[in-house]
Image (cartoon, rainbow, N blue to C red):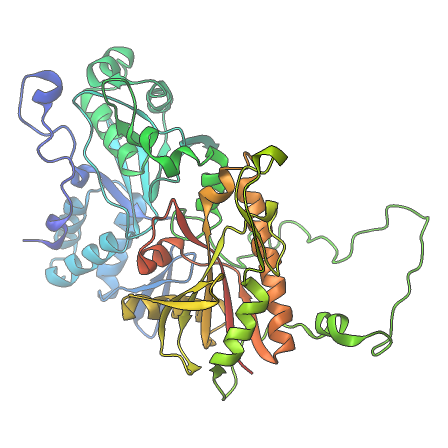
Length: 495
């Protein structure tokens, strides 16, 4: 059996008889979709060796002869063939091609989510599905009962298309026709397959079934119960997320969007960068005193002046005593503030070294320990009230994945301890609306600065990281992504 024949048959078993009462032929099969490479992929050839590189710098080798490779990539560039048709076309044009190598490459492209999937009908592309990660999976088309869109779905223009996205999934859908966009828009209310057929006669049943399956595959569409409710309506965590907060969270973290991450300089050569200092806005100016070193009591001001991001760890490992001191001055509880409804304080709060929005302190500290004198490697949770570490069960490969991710963010340098800040989201959204996630990120910034100052005072090597994968961390720590997961990473080492 060809490797691509092992792909998921999400539509298999969904019959036209379920929608039309006539035939048992499936209305949708993922392998019926035309494939092409995802956007931003480049080919690099050196000394006869070829690799594909995506926008994030991830590489995939292409162990194919040059002529076969040219035909293969040309067919993918056209985006008019299914995986089966693509393999057959290459073998027909270049019969000397090793079939096993060809199908191996196809399987790697599919499993690694390097491909886009286009729905072609009556000589046109109706929609294109773009997976974002290996967590993406095709789902069945809901042809029985009614279904409707999630309230987290975003429909927006991208070029000449309508982009349909949802932070509940690991892919997105580009709708190329007004008929497809109209179908999506109509699903703001519960509809059955038959009602969709009547309301959208320009779309044939197979197009509707395929579009439903694609929308469900990207986390946008769900079956309804008898009252028209979908699963998210009964989920306590999801009910407390606002649309823009969850969208912002998923789009500002890796794993649930296909946008480049890091310093990609997208407007280089097109738009001049702003000056490093903003132009004066007033001619009226008041000069301020600039103190000399040692002019004042040095503690805070010297620490603020000395603070640096240090990516290289020292020969000496971080010590457990140093780690305990560091955590005490960055996250330890100083006082519990009980709820006092008569005074308008409806929740229990606490006082800690760092400022926290509403004294809520929703951030939890998780430590991935690689090297620390007096503490075995592993994953730990910091208990800020008892000032103790709780050792957690975690897969060693998953922990190494977190540490490697931190190393990539620090230009290849390894750290002794990776401190992951995880937010209990509903702790904030319970009290605040509209600005909950914005406040949460402000809290992360306050903790980062406190960690820098504490590390500088202890003569340690600190470095705040710019991004991380919240899905990876949630899986490693055994957390629910929508209830508690990572929002910041901080590397700490001996200096």
